[in-house]
Amino acid sequence: MTLALGCIADDYTGASDLANTLTKAGLRTVQTIGVPADDLALPEVDAVVVSLKSRSIPAEEAVARSREAAAWLNARGAGHLLFKVCSTFDSTDAGNIGPVTDALREDAGVGIALVTPAFPETARTVYLGHLFVGAVPLAESPLKDHPLNPMRDSNLVRVLARQSRAEVGLIDLATVAQGAEAVSARLDALAKDGKGAAIADAVLDRDLAVLGAAALTRKVSTGASGLGLGLARALVAAGRVAPAAAQADLGPAIGGPAACLAGSCSQATLGQIARAEAVMPVRRLDPARLLAGEDEAGAALAWAMERIGHGPVLIASSAGPEDVAAVQAKYGRDAAGHAIEAAMARIAEGLVNGGVRRLVVAGGETSGAVVDRLGLPAFRVGPEIAAGVPVLRTTDRDMWLALKSGNFGGPDFFADALRLMP
Image (cartoon, rainbow, N blue to C red; front, side, top):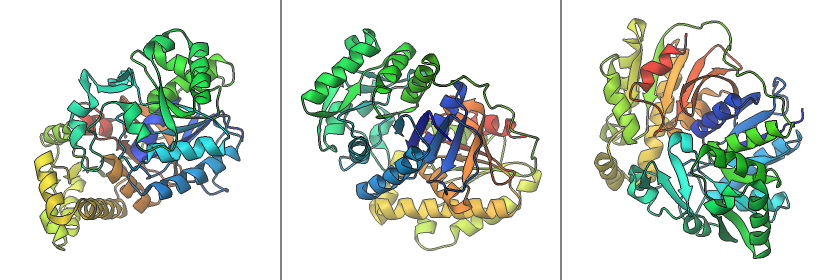
């Protein structure tokens, strides 16, 4: 196998987003969970997205896992490596975007990496190095209160510099407007000036194609699915990939019970849970009971098993910023997060053991915990539920899955997802 594009994603929902984007752009794509075993059977593909759960772990662990993924992809001839990060650049000053980018570019012998989380299709744009969520700067958006990685600075040059060993430069919109050669020349100039990374502006879809073509002149880049789209389009335009039909037909219907799990505390997911209450039973986990050692997960699972024979159910650990802050203050941020993730993973395992073959999961950390607990090795990518969220079909068993980043999807996301999982 010779891959045109190898991707390393720092969480599972982001990996699904990227796999969906690459598939729509014409690349035959498979998403794996973790670094695959050498004997994992894969179809002939153009791109592999290796999903890691590395966004919020210690930086040295994230670097080690990312290097292992890069080695696997390089052994299969990956022409370019994309380190896929969230379009809201979720990261603390300790990492992990900077440390992983530093390690990957240094291992590849690359002096500088192009970096951008821009994805105009999902209202993420970068101008003069500042990230906007819609019309609002990142630090004024709901992401400022992210429970794990609160984002209080919209200037990505500053954000990335605080966690990188090398200095960080800027490729402004005026340079991007001049085309890929101008962007590549700017990268050369910044590298000579000692910069190890460059935040690139992008406000329109066409800017992504320019950045993708420029990024391909080097072995490594870092960005959200928007940069993946630019890379895919550049590969097709250069004749390095023959565009394939989207992988919409993944086989016959599976049927059977269906369930939804929501762990994200984003405003989008909270609204989606509220809408779901009109069409399916919803049970909300009590974090206080859970963290006090009571069997809240077992009670929730028993509640679900009593109902899934009559239709889909939803179990949510999601809560608003004030409630999350109160729980974290009492029990500690890490302890609370780990306990809730473990509970949701246990519930998912119980649901699947009980016959559920259609599972929708909202939230990056929750999705990671669930997929790890289920031991799923890889997925084929199917139809798009919402921008950045595809239907997935497991390669090792008959099961539909959707993994949603917290902020993605429309108000009726859960019902929309289940409609695409026959």
